[in-house]
Each structure stands twice: as C-alpha cells, then as structure tokens.
Image (cartoon, rainbow, N blue to C red; front, side, top):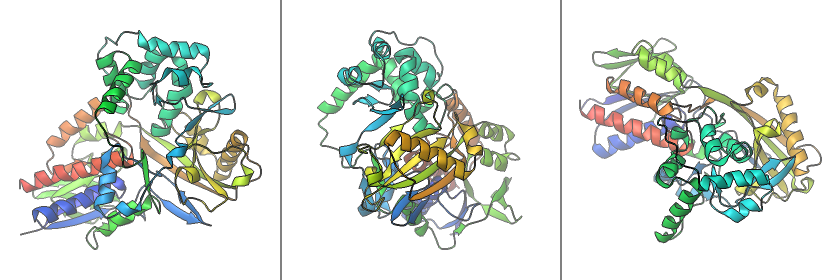
Length: 472
C-alpha cells in the first residue's frame, strides 16, 4: 500500500499533538503514514519552554495544564509520562488580589465570575460594601432577553456590577486570555456562566445548585489537583511527543510559504522553494500566519483567519532568598486589577505552587506583563521590564535586595483574542473547510487557548483528516 503523506505546519503543542495522533491512528488502523512536520523556528514547543539555571526550574510559557479538561492529562499518561506528573500543593490553593497597594485573599468560593458563598464575600476587603450589595442583586435580577453574543465585560456589569468586573473578573480573566473583557466573547470564553443564567437566572443560585448536584453524585475525589505539571517542566511533554514521531519527520528552521490544491492532493511550498506533495495538511500555527498560506486557495477563509486578533505578553522570572521576602507566600500568587494602575498583570509563586522549582531557602516568582490592555509596555527593553517587575513585587511582597536570578521571555502575537462573535467566525471557518477535503486547522485560535484545549484541537484535526484520507 502506498503511504499517505501528511504535512503538519507548526511545531507547537497543537501541531505535535496532531502529528502524534496521526501516528497513533495509522498504527492502530494499519495504514502506512509518511509524516512531515515543518517548523519555522529552530525548536519545537512554541511558547512552551523550560530552562534550568543555578538549581532553578524556569518556565518561559505555560507552567501547567488544567486537569478538568482531560485531553492533556490523557495524552501525558498515554505517552508514558504518568509517573512524571505533579499536582499543586493545595494547602496553598489561595489567590490574592491587589487593592490599594496591599494583597487581599480572593474570597473563598469565588469561581472566576461569581461567588458561591455569602460570608467570605461579606468579610472580604476586596470589595466595598456598595460592591458587595451590588453583587447580591444577582439573586433577583431577570435573565437577559436579547439574543446574540455579549461581551464578558457587559455580562459581568449587568449581573454583578462594575466593581466585581474591575476588582476580580478582569484580573482573573486577564490571567487566562491577557484580554480586554469588554471585547471578549462570553459565549466563546465562559459558556458555563451563560448557561447558568439561562437555566437558573441567577449566577449565584446556579452555582450553588450545580455544586449540590455534584456533591450528591457521589464523587470519590479527584486524583489530580486542578493544575498539573511535569516534574522536569512542561517541555518534557514536547520532548516526549517529538520522540514518538517517525525518524526524520521533523524539519526545523523550515517555514512554509504557501499551500495549493493539486490533482492528487496538496502541495506545500516551503520558504526555500521546495514543494512537498501531501495527501493531507494540518495547519497548526497562529491564525494570521495560516491565513497567508491559504490566501491563494480560499481567499474568504484567509480573510476569516486573518480577522482573529492576537495579543502579546512577556513572562519574567525573579528569584530571591526566601529570607528576603516578608510575605508568607501562602498562596499560588496574586492578580493585579487594571484599575490599580500598575504595570504587572499577575505574579505566580512558582516555588510554592509546584515542588522542585527552586533550591531550598529560595523563592521563585513568575511575573506577567503586557496583554491587550498594556501592549505599550512591551516596547521597553528587557532591563526596564525587569526593573518594573522587581519594583512592583518588592513593594507588594515586602522584598529587600535585588533578585539573585532574573529572566525575560517575550511572546509576541501568541494569545488569540476571542472577541464578540468569535464562535460565528469559527462556524464560518469550519464551513469553508468542508469544501477543502484533506485540510485541517488546529491551535489556540479556535475553541480554547489552554494547553489542554490545544491538545484537543490538534488531536481532533488529526482525526478529521484521518476520516477524510480513509475515504480515499
């Protein structure tokens, strides 16, 4: 049997997940596969990057994935990384919020947009009394009657008030999407809360009722914490996936320039001019770059892809002697509301959150800057970003002295922005793809930005392509 050739464009986690799933399917179903993965840069993994320095384990990008979304966890276990998985130390499962230059614990039971318990909110210093009373109005407000998508910012103001948006929701959601909540699609980013309003009217009542249903379902207890990582850092996942691809399948430093339909499938033209024949193609890079590749094949599809906006950010690692930090670091980190007027978005206490991140008697912090609301900050030099990050965390955590280690990693144009109407755009993209058999898209631009979402996207693209190719 003649092998089927599939070309995967993009060596981030979505492309790697797609390539690995194709290998699994070909093996399980007994068809020969000729796989080529082309990556424009000199390394695999995209924003996933782990470094070691002076006994510290540093993550340039994502430091974990969410266990509630099972795809990354299942993949890690399937490729032999089960013994390497590490959960968080949930004794410290607390998030702080900055208000008035001080850290205040997020009220216990506050789930991203809304509280599930009254007393922690009433006792909290995160909200004013007016803000607390406005939160309570959710209990009596009617459902939204208008149809169509709504921005996350509009939804939270309408149900919970401006203070809830500014003090908690914006910084928490900003930590996920680095986005402006007034532009984010509620339907695409927080569909659970949209469903709660539709089914229960009140978010607070809906969360309480669904929590009770979960309690009476007899769950025996989760095996993993909400956040899961790997003992040697997230790049272990990248390395393990790459090792399971056929020898010679990966071509680094090989940008794709265009794709074109051919009588016998597809042609992928590389930047050096060399064409690759393919029976199927998975495009797993950022949507605007993939738009350029398909512009000659399907201009409307290219326009839809190019219309997906992206934000840029930077991750800053700072390490200090533990004795130099007055704060007890009894949480996973803190978020910074935009209304505080600070440069940083958030800070994770990495050496508290996960074991093995710092030598004994040292603390490792990860600070985040940039995003859609503070894009101008990324025009500064690394030295200036380091100074900004150090000055702010030093003031908030009571740090004396300079960091013993510091790093800056920039992530230009890597975070897709799911703006209002995003799911309509995705439906239109998927409709265009139906007329292009043998072509699939994967990545964080479509139906989820996290590691688990990207794994699911890559594997789903591989399965759709597998079905299409089997039909031949």
